[in-house]
Length: 88
Image (tube, rainbow, N blue to C red; front, side):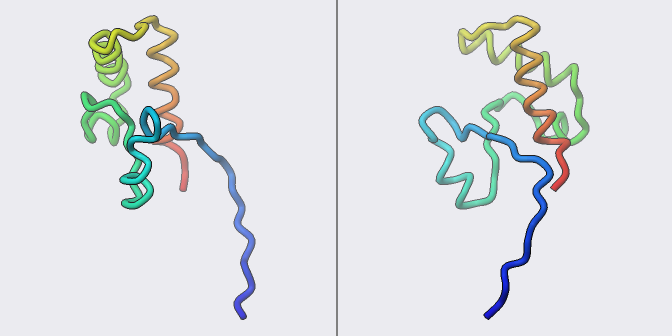
């Protein structure tokens, strides 16, 4: 029998998989994270274009009728930044 090896976890993040878990099955089944900001490109994220990301998040929030204060943008961009720049 193989012994279970301990794993050191440095960070854990909560990722909401869509309202009501609408992305959960796809995300878990395909090892993906759906972030919900369709306006962001993979290039914006991979190159961490922070000003572009914040602007696109603000525009998306406006279109969705959500608050668009600098705190709201910072929270959304900060959560994405933590996830993107975290180490495996």
